[in-house]
Length: 413
Ligand code: ADP
Ligand code: ASP
Ligand code: MG
Image (cartoon, rainbow, N blue to C red; front, side, top):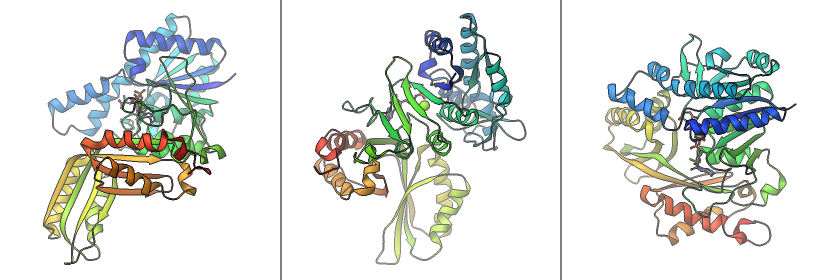
């Protein structure tokens, strides 16, 4: 008898009809003999609606109270699914995070899971029940409700799968797997049968929100077999797992676009030791993640420093940077609220040269100016003007993924 953790995202539980469809799918698995734990997101649009309500009352709502508010979305869908399963004759019980001791730190809005006590889940599974869990939420040492970050019902599911040593963690969403690029933006995108944890980690970190970044990290650490499938059809989906040899033959397995990035430039910074630390220290202390950084060498002893942050962190970043800039006598601070980060990802890049150069050629062919560049072993990212983001993504997809001669990095390249 397999133990399966399934997670259904917002669109999958977005209406009463959809909740009925999810209950039917869960019921089929239960009937087939599996032990079932089902994690649910809030109904589509609900979390955004709740954030908006808070922002209508206060420009910067208190993070603790915001978590009390936004965690309610998942409570509703968990209870509705349990009610439906019961009405179909399947014993089911729903739980919130504090009932399962999903313990986190107190970093409201982006809390990290420290531990889970699965005893109660195991007890209910033994009693033959379907266990339904509200995703996205946790509880801190004081007993306060926390949330784990946007999209983090995926993380709840993977964490439960790891804690329960589940046979598989199935992520049900509105597309039928992981594609070579966002299928809603890139018409030629192809579904991947398999993708390695490392590639998926890069894709998720670079804006492919089909899986939340930390859920992939956790799945890799605990070797949780992960599959992404559609809740709307029976298609096979994409397995995310350990790298195998055939994956190395593929140079670029995906292209990702992130339009949620902002660019900040501090101009006229004196070129002397310690200033970068003065600038980035307070940003790090505020828990803001800085992504790409470039610093131009200067002839006159002054330099410009440019970096990117998530758009949600832009206001806080500007407040901090403007203060430091005046303290260190920099000439000014500029920013661009929305830039596009476009990336190509593939484990084959580890062993093949020339990928970045080819990428720059493709972008030049479209007359797209590259503003920043970052590379790792298995990815190349560039920042371009936001209005060219989708064009860049499609051009790169056509060049690297749609073109077999380049894709198969064996003798043909
Ligand atoms: P859920 O609410 O089920 O968690 P999300 O909206 O978080 O769903 O994630 C699914 C979406 O991810 C898809 O609708 C798709 O637009 C987007 N996406 C981005 N990149 C990719 C990709 N490479 N493959 C599949 N989907 C992707
Ligand atoms: N409901 C939360 C969000 O919209 C969590 C999730 O859907 O995974 O971010
Ligand atoms: Mg999601």
